[in-house]
Length: 128
Image (cartoon, rainbow, N blue to C red; front, side, top):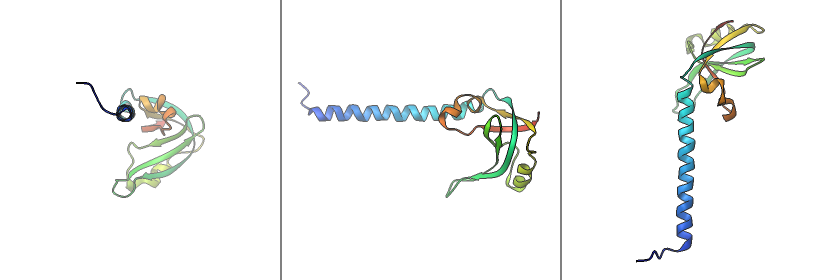
């Protein structure tokens, strides 16, 4: 028996499938970015310009204590490792402007995360 669906139905179905495939691809890319930020963690040396406490989250989302560090040669870096709300201010003040630090960053933070408009995340830091 021949298919008697209207032509618009066939094109609408194809459009829905195409949009679904794109949404699935973007979701997989997002998950891969998160996973790759825990792989191949290596130190990146940068000169600090300034640092400030940074908390994110709103509504029912839990905030995360971190420090936003502005560097001369690496741009902005979000430091999350070893920081909690009790020492947030002290952690931000521990960065001395003009001093070089090594930030331990995962694969996506070091490489292609910048093309996705992602702020690089450092697990830890120490003087270079």
